[in-house]
Image 1 (cartoon, rainbow, N blue to C red):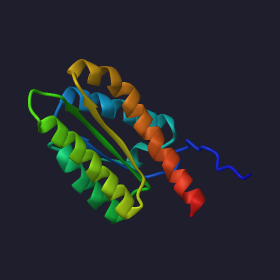
Image 2 (spheres, rainbow, N blue to C red):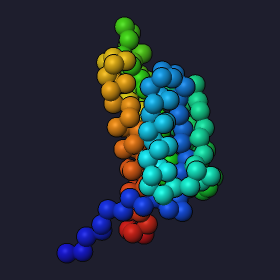
Image 3 (cartoon, rainbow, N blue to C red):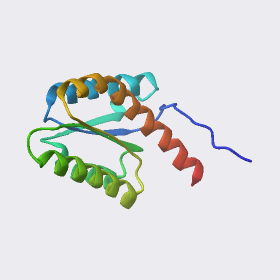
Image 4 (cartoon, one colour):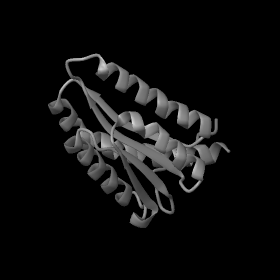
Length: 150
């Protein structure tokens, strides 16, 4: 059996990040962890482009534009949807995830989805560093995997 090995070397990769500004403390934490991991993995700072949007629902549209530009090897979605007292949480959580998935499948662009959906601010703050770094690694790994399969 031939196995495609995991490759987490980001050298030479161009990465686009779309970050929500809503719940900015958590989103800034996600970005800091993601950016640090990309650099640690060999992605050059000049090869990382950040676009910010008002909230999680706007992320898929900007991901689509970035994917269609063919300027990136992979994309990363960063955001935080924290449960409130209304049904709005479910709508934003479900629709942002659906939108990210649709962009990925329609364009063939690997997208790491690190839009956190939590019940509390504290849960989001606990997860932001780990999930931000994981998103960077997912983007790199999936880029290599898709190239190996092509």
